[in-house]
Length: 407
Ligand SMILES: [Fe+2]
Image 1 (cartoon, protein in one colour):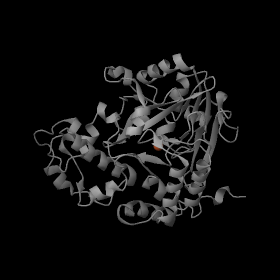
Image 2: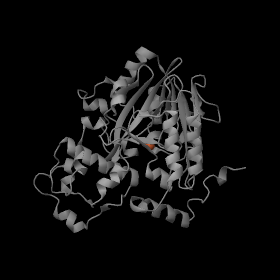
Image 3: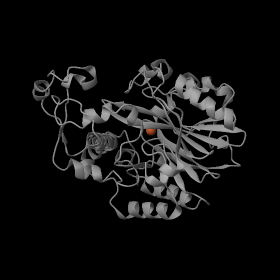
């Protein structure tokens, strides 16, 4: 978190003394990601009496990044934007806020495609049986498209954003991005501008990422220490340098899936370095470490990390696989945000919690997108580029992601 954000943010709930039962998430097999059935929650007040961040860690093979529920003060109570698994710990922290600011009146799932956000919606709606539920249009499931009622969403108190209007229109402005046709389903997310705080809430499309690891890793730095190493026979050792190094690599994995300066060593070599003294534990995956970082990985990471404050960006995986032919759609969405009166902050569902987002910052972000080459195949982008090309060639992804929605 940047110094300016530290001044505004405050922690409202400590999590270190909480028992494991309070962090239990029994539905984890639906999307079996680290830390599986144990979800610790970090709660922070981002903008006093207006916006709170609830973060949990989520990832695959220790490529774990924060996933955020944003809680917003609205007339009559609280709005939950992007659900998270409602563990007892999370619910207790929400009860503390409800006692002060009023009950949870609205739950919003503002994305059509982000599984990590939608899977906890049914449990969240059961936790707040009186709340009105709003979902992004075009919800889809894979491999079979099921109606929302089959996905456990209570249709009796659920409305669809855009089609049925928008919640809290007197205090929020809603800005849809998409829909874009991804072949298997649509990508769409709907941003919410909360006028009282000047914060734009988004899900996946734009994020801020810092070189300093998120505070959530203070609770459990294991994923960072695991990836800070160069070989499987090295023990997990904790230091500020190891955490930053591990975080830089986690960011490369999370944003490029397979970054350019990464080789996958032969299986025999992986096994040769495994099962050595000092790594014989599930925490160290028994020394199994199928990664070999090549020279240049630090430079690749620096392109994604802000040193003093979060670097505003479209994550390459989104740019190259979701919006490779929709740059203009993104720029138009950003322009709508730039014109919002009082816009000051960005709060997204991943990575940094509060990113400076004033009109001049939005303009320079848009200009940098306009000027640079978009969705390239160079360097670290080559793996994502090859996936997109294959999907295009197979006819899974259409050339024009908007064609299906034009009159
Ligand atoms: Fe997401």
